[in-house]
Length: 353
Image 1 (cartoon, rainbow, N blue to C red):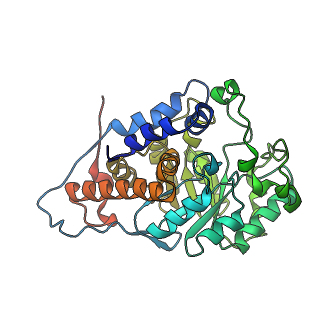
Image 2 (spheres, rainbow, N blue to C red):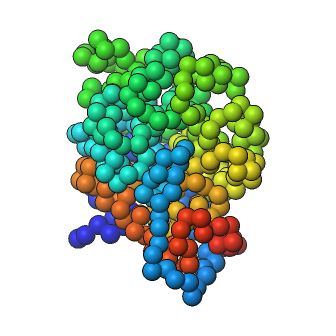
């Protein structure tokens, strides 16, 4: 049976993966309220299409941080791609390069960031940074990312501690040596993987500490995990170059707003001064259209990329992205939008259902 939508890839991937690997990828925090609401919130939003427009040509191209991408559909940082496919993040990076979109490599990748860069040297790559308790390690990661051609730092702010992920605890999840987190180890340790991860995010990282990172890099800094206007305003005050509305896929604090619901508040707070992105719950092309209409510059995919990777490696990732891009193209045409600039808030109607 052909795989024609993202839900098909999800079902196929679940059949292929072990129980513990599947629940690591799909896992959520506590009762999973936010995880479920990320998807449900999109279904509460209705569209107001405009007709009798010439939609014979529809252009999905846009830019993020000044770099052109083929569509506003990119790849969020997710950990341990080798759980889904032997070549791991290398395959993901190659798919992103071929489709001319942005891939954010996770600090918790199963491949070293230099190997990811080498796999797709012409691709647009950003690097996810969780600021570590060890400042020297943090500094080294930033310098390595910049030296490897990554074009932005995406600092994840919503993991001062790990969320309460019950399924991982029930499964007593232990990452196999082949997917141990190479960017958090010295070159010597990478040759002989340690039995446990010894580097953890800082619990004391504060707004004023952003300046320490700004002093050691020329890369744009984007803050990932912002959900409120107060933090959006603080991000502006601290001169970052972008905001990523995200609740970590519902894997951190359960009961926070769905990303699409928080997006409007954040977009209003920044007043167009910096770009705003989002992830969480995007599963169809019309979801992409809704997010852009509410002010997102671009959406990013997390779990669906791993579904595609599980199914067919690099080709599966490309298929997932191409399906979503085609659905988005169709949704634009059916709404009377011929370019990204024509996707405006007038397109949105909120439902009470």
